Image (cartoon, rainbow, N blue to C red):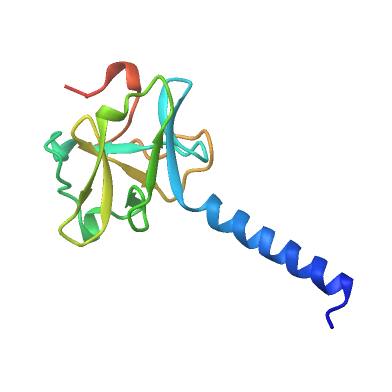
Length: 136
């Protein structure tokens, strides 16, 4: 016979596991102060050489501190208003990873950013300010 406290511990463990599972199922893209960010308010970037052609031109050494967004496998995508779902899509990169595309531009995150920062802007890399995007 299972003691009452063991039953509660089991119920709590299952509830925590379910919470953990549901919290990592999807990603969210939103606008914060005009900038395109993920659910953790981490800025999303584009690479100018991608040319808005729906395909990444950046692999291996090119990536450096940048990561195709999302960095893991395909996940459910939630787009928060005023963004339009029709502006987003997933594509499978030639390296087998999935990447979110915004208005034809592959999205990247920057490893050194913290929430609400845009430290990845440099040279060919730009942060996405939604009111002035695409860049040309």
